[in-house]
Every structure is written in structure tokens, then in C-alpha cells.
Image 1 (cartoon, rainbow, N blue to C red):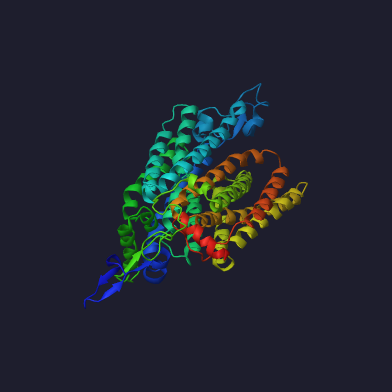
Image 2: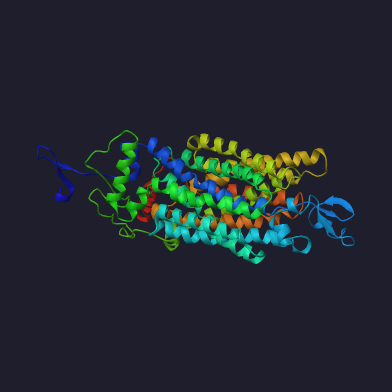
Amino acid sequence: MSSAEALLDGGGAARRRVRVSVDDALARHAGEFGRWQLRHFVLVSSAWLLEALHTMVVIFADRQPAMVCAAGDVGGGDRRCDPCAATGWEWADGPASASSTVSEFGLVCGERYKVGLVQAIFFAGCMIGAGVFGHLSDSFLGRKGSLQVVCVLNGVFGILTALSPNYWAYAALRLLTGFSAGSVGLCSFVLATEPVGPSRRGAAGMSTFYFFSGGIAALAGIAAMFQSSWRMLYVVTSVPSIVFVVAVLPFVSESPRWFLVRRRADDAMRVIRAIAHGNGRTVPDDVTLKLDDEGDDGVGGDNSVDSSSSSGSIIDVFRSRTTRFRLVLSVVINLLASVVYYGLSLNVVNLKTNLYVSVVVNSLAELPAYLLTALLLDHLGRKPLAIGTMLLSGVFCSAGSLVAGAGAMRVLRLACGVVGIFGMAATYNLLFIYTAELFPTVVRNAALGCTSQASQMGAILAPLVVLLGERVPFALFGVSGLVGGMLVFCLPETKNKPMYDTMAGLEEGEKILLK
């Protein structure tokens, strides 16, 4: 036994230092989900409310006010343009009640396409930002540092959006907002779940999405109070991001896993001891942390690809056959799930009902899916649940495409869509947990950033699918759900499996499982 591995106790006897992984330290000593993790989880996950505000504010800021021909006959949208060609048109409830980008920038009739364009531009920014901040979160910025940066950018760009002098300035600022907003949930999710023990990580991860749905519901209330000014709505929904950085993030700890892969073992151990103290437990003095590609003597295994590497990139993911296969499948599955989720959501939101009430109802309708998934996640496992929820959505969407006619038939098609979005809402959020557990800490955010980009691409495609009529979108959503469910069969189960820290540790773990 080397002197580096020995400790002298009070009686002078030598004791061997016990080296454990982060998962083992949480499970055996600090606690998997106690008071410390609960407090940390709530603080960090509240960032999802901010993402909901920045993403969904366009529902109200870009709303289409009712139009009326000068001779009467209230209507809305492009269908009023031709009938009103002779007499002209005006806002049905007067200019004061028509505050939106549509009315101010003239996005009606032949310019209506620009509303969809700016939404696509926002999600394009999300795609770019997810890749950039996914990498930065794994490298020198860390999880907390990246979350701090994106929240500051969100607040600044959101407030500047309120000052947009014209449409193209508005579109450019929405692109920049998307660049930062697309990574808020990503950074928050990883930072909230990495300090949680393996047996509680799944349920905790699913619970983060209650904050996003709650944010959408809160947005509806905020928008109802600021109907007279879309510019003020952007200011009010952007200021909370700055408040979060100043009032919440100082009380949040960096991930011990990130510290460990950055070779800052003392800082990682400090966080573990803080977790134990907060949970009313103690970590023995002879316990230290190790990476999963290290032996008890602190030396990397013989099969270590690069045990000295403290960070990784998406290139490292593609170098390994194991992670390359997982990433390709995860990208395709996330893309398909996003097309269905956002597509069905748009169908529901476009119902001819009160906009504010509809948004609240839609956000609350997803909550049972999150609850059911959280309850079943650790009983059924990630893989069976993902397969089941995707296939459930695919089957009912396919059934909806076969329903023709009006009246009761439309109600039946609507019911198929409700079940479809129930299943895909569960899948869409389950994929965050599943994907995080498929990749090691050193490249986890980079991989999540890549799959998040795929999700944003699905969000861009969804509105185009919805334009294809009543039945065709259901058919495409059905095919997407069924194909996605079949692809999940090719992924490994991660229930109660270690959350690996390094690429070498993952490769070694896979070899052990195959023996």
C-alpha cells in the first residue's frame, strides 16, 4: 500500500483510503435524494419556467387579432383579405385591443407567412445554441456557468426585443433569444439531476417538466394582464431571467460530477460532504471520489481511451462505436417525437376558443402524463416505457387519420389527438432522462445538445405538417410515433445502471455486461 493511499488515525494505525464513484458516495453515505437535493432541485428546475416564458410568449405577442371588412362581417386571418379588397378592413375590436406584432408590423394577408418564419427562426437559434452551450457546459464553463450565461443573454435579448423598430429587427432578436433559450432547460436538467442518486434520478428528472408546464400556465395569466402592449409583455417575461441569475443561482452548487471529470476532486468531495450535511448524514473521512475509469489506486484502467481527459466533445462521441450508435438513434427518435409533440400541440392551440384559457388547459393536460411516467419509470424501466408511450401515440394518431367526416367524427379525431399528445408528452420528456443516462458525464451535455438540436428541427417541421389538412397530419404523426417506438428497441436499458463519468468507464461497463 502506497503512502498516498494510507491515512494515520488517532492511534497511528494506517487505514486504506476508500475510493468510490459519485453514485456510490450518494447511495452509501450522502443520500440519494434528501433535503439538500430537494432544495437544489427546486432552485435549479425553476429555470424551466424561464424557458417556457421565452419560448411560448409568441403565442400572445404574435397573435392574430380579429379583422372586419369596413362594411361588416367579422373574420380573421388571410380569408378576410380577398372579401375586403373592395371596402378595405379594420381591426374588429379597435386598434387599442389589437396590440401584437401582427398588427404593428402588418403581418396579414400576403405577409402572414412572416409569423411562421419568425417562429422557425427562433427554433433555428435554439438548434445552434443547444450545440454551442452543450459543449461549453461539458468543458470550462460547467453546468452552473453555462446556465448563468444563457439566462443573462435571455434577459438582455428579450428586453431588446421589446424595442424592435421593425419586423426584421424583431426576427433577428428572436434568433438571438432562441440561441440562449434553447439551452436553459438542457443546462438546468443536467445540473438538477446529476447530484441525485441512481434510484431516484428518473423520478426527479421527470419532475423537472412540471416547471415548464407551470411556466406556460403562468404566461397565460401574465399575457392576460398585458393585452394592450406586446412590447411590455416581452419586458415582463424577460426580467425574471435576470432576477434568477441574481437571486437564485448564488445558492446553487456546481455538479460534483463535472468537478470530478475536470480533475477537481477536492471540489467534488466538498459538494458531496455538503449534500451529506444537508441530509443529516456524514461521509467518513477515509472516503474519496474516483472516476469510473480509475482503479482503487487512482490509475486509469488499461483500456482507458484517454483517462487524463477532463472534458469531451461531440467528436469523442462519434469516435466510440457504442456512443456513436446511441447518438444516431437518439437524434432520430428525438426528431420524430418532437414533430408529433409540437404538431399535436399546434392542433390543440388552434381551436377556436379563448386563447388564454386554451393555453392554460393545454399546459395542465400534460401533467397527468408526467405523473404517470414518474410513477412507472423505476418500475418498468426507461426502455419499455419509451416504447409503450411512443407506440400509444402512434396508434391513436394513425386511428385519427382514418376518421373522416364532420360532427361526431371530428370529436372522435380530437379524442385520438388528445390520447396521442398524452403519450408523446410522456415520451418527449422521458427522452431527456433516457438520453442523459446513455452518455457519460464528460460528453453528456454535448450529446444532449445534439439531441436537443434534433428536437428543435422537429419543432420547425411541425407547423409545416399541420398545414397539410385534417387527416394527413394525423397519418404522419402516427407513422412518426410507430417508427420512433420501434427504434427505441435498439437502445439499451439504463434503469439502475451506473451513470458513467468517462468514455473509458462506459466502454468498460459495456464489456462487463457482455461477458
